Length: 267
Image (cartoon, rainbow, N blue to C red):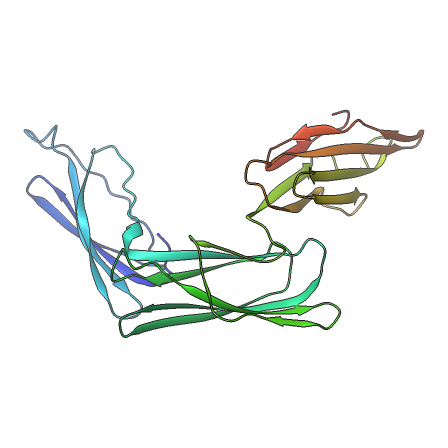
């Protein structure tokens, strides 16, 4: 459970005639209990119910759930109770110095607004709002994009879609690829490694490249974030060049669609 808009949760755990009250909070996010099956209660399930206390003062009842006695009990905020919007800056070409955005939710007399500032490609923030009506999920945003060359673009209020907002490059998603070279140099006669990555969507004319030189002092890990326009085209290519005392050895381009690319010498 996230505690960004929730202050705490009061939980009632029941087993047959026995009841125990528990509180969950950022300071106490979990409890460990040992329950000894009682005679005649071998098939009796655990039951949980309770109340969520929100930071704005609201209280929402948690519906009753049943669990087996050996089960990990995970209490989550019901999706119907909240709206969560991921806000991502897609700027692989470093065209923007910063992007400021304000998100707004209105329902009846209730108004919730929050500002974010994004300065790095693939930077992500999350905006969370408690909902009083699960069907009322409409939200809006207004953005100011400051270009690296000094130009400024300002939008009016725009209706948001789903629970994702991508600013900057016109993308439908940003895929973070975590690349790990498991043998950072120097290692034997291996002096350095260069990893080339490429993404190509010829139909929509989207092309991204990145090269990372791993040499002494480099951790061997980095993240390459790909801004895409076609949700179906999520694959990319990579190539490894190893620099040894005898000279460089350039590998072939290989395809991958993994978001965890783990590499070793000779791969």
